[in-house]
Image (cartoon, rainbow, N blue to C red; front, side, top):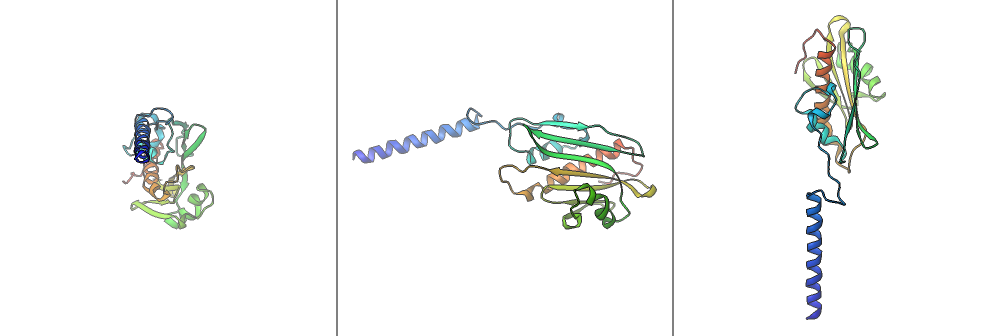
Length: 205
């Protein structure tokens, strides 16, 4: 009888302890850290104004209490263009984007074997999953990288190529779920660059 009572008391203490720990987590009380929220006004301007930007960043970011962003300056005009953004949590960079002028060559294969391959660190973009947002915009995406070509000027088939690289994946989450977030970020950054570079061809969504 006494042993049964001890078991009941022990079980009750375990339940109360678990409940208290759960409440502390929900209320973000010590020793649990809160997860920071990424708002639209916090991110680099050159990631664009799409309503998908902040949610996409929140999804790919490691679960940390604070985030910071550093924007790289734009070089406008038809001779050169460069735009980039770096995202950090504590001392760890988890995402980088960059957009620059490229020569699309007129076909997906020309772009994939040339500027896209160079910009995504000599990996073969044709082994990535291809996505087409419109008839003249090509993209590739992998578990942690995306690249998107956007025609800019008709002369010499000049385009902008936007690359997004996810450096760190958090808490063992499945990487495949990042595909759409990387595409959303690349598309929004490409649209911003298209306007910033004063492209003469329309940006097709």
